[in-house]
Length: 422
Image (cartoon, rainbow, N blue to C red; front, side, top):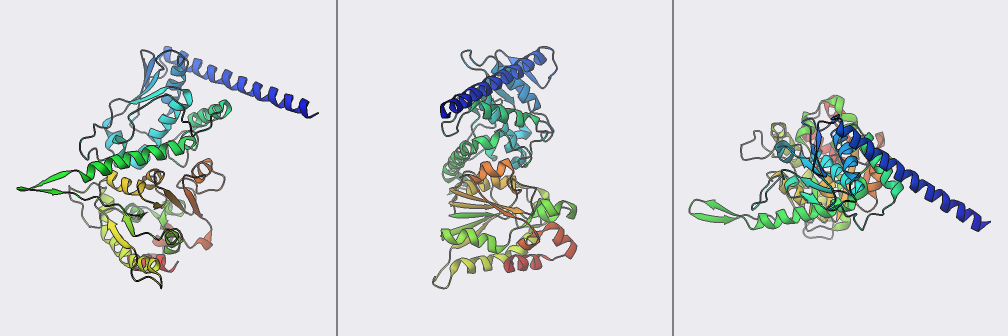
């Protein structure tokens, strides 16, 4: 009886694999046929390689052309050399201040190439790397990659087919909405993000800046723990976006993760705490618009954070300092190279936190960022050894949402006091 059951299971598994292979072949054949008829002007053949142009509106179906192109290229992947998925990346993709929302597109396209067994290449690249430039982490990540399957990721034909289908059915690129494809390779992305941050850190330490007749060496000191304090755009948001989208994380949650580490230094990564942005500061105008308010919130929160980490038996607590004038890649590198990084709902923080030794994603109310809702595939992918998921749900979570701030017309001091008390 056991032998018959085992044989039946083996037959069913073999049949499933055959069905997956047939579906994969038909998808590739359909893509090649559509390309021949010119139905997808966003991509083209270049020899056996395929070139995909990233649309200007990269939030709506940006991977649809890439899905068709990758399937068409995969039909010829047994040729030598293997086909390459070439990304025609416009300059705004490499330099936009929405880098947190462009990274999921980059990693989704990387995942599509791996799933189809073809190479990957950015053309033109988001570089070259000269001293401590480019300023955006997209230029420090791999600009090309081989089709070789990562050894740390289990490979199964059925899984591959499901991941391809799930990725290509998604109609947006927002990290928390498209949860197929890229999460499968979260360990790979974490390793690459950390390597990119290390390269930037080394370059940054070695840069000499001209200061009149003298030269001054920049310092780029890292912290054991990093907290991303997202503030400026939160204060700018309308209350209608607040309940599920963003908010402030209370002190109790920060201490829950910081205390076991006993960090020697804690860095607060945030946007400039000034009222007006100068041309030298790499940030959005709305962040500086609320810089004074954000400063006033931290003025209340930081002493309590310092006190909460010092404890009764310690003479001195950790060094707590604010980093509000880093470049974009500098801020992301701090997050990626920390022993512990704590993120609010923010793609700007979540992606580099994959590179940290330990990353924590806090959720405010649910729905905006990765892994906030139970059962989400991204939660499973990132919660298994990549990021700790601290989902804060329900009215008893005492989360200070945008809606609550706006309705109560809370001042910065009141916001800070609420965070300290909860």
